[in-house]
Length: 167
Image (cartoon, rainbow, N blue to C red; front, side, top):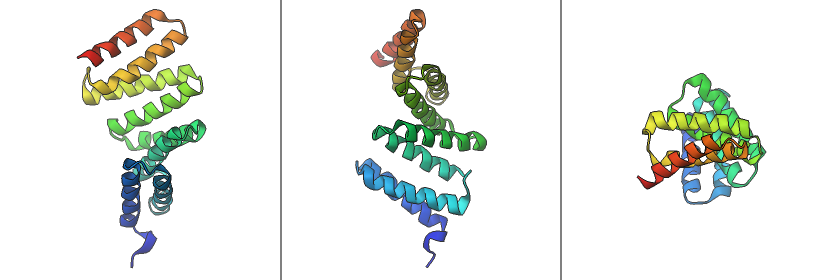
């Protein structure tokens, strides 16, 4: 028996966590993501992309639980690894989006703006200029510019979001 010293076991635990999460069983998914994180860290080290993937998934769960600080910590940990690994744009876009949401919730609008912009750039590269997934980050960027009383910029981003949504 291979036990918990095998990457296949860690992969299976991670996959179970994903399914539980898809089913809406977030508490149980959390336990499995934590277990897979522990296994991947032990087997592959702190800097492996599988660890980043676990951290990103945990960031989403913490966000859904409204634990903004733990969510931000998880997303930042995932980002640190992904930036070293030159990870694909879709994972980075998701991480930047999570970081941006956290900073926005904390009222740290400059940090939120920076990360929403990175998310948007990644999405445009991957999905094209008018993909529906880009509408929401555009709206958040517009809201940040509104809060900063930069109304021309706000209008531009809200208009871009509107165009994406109606096309």
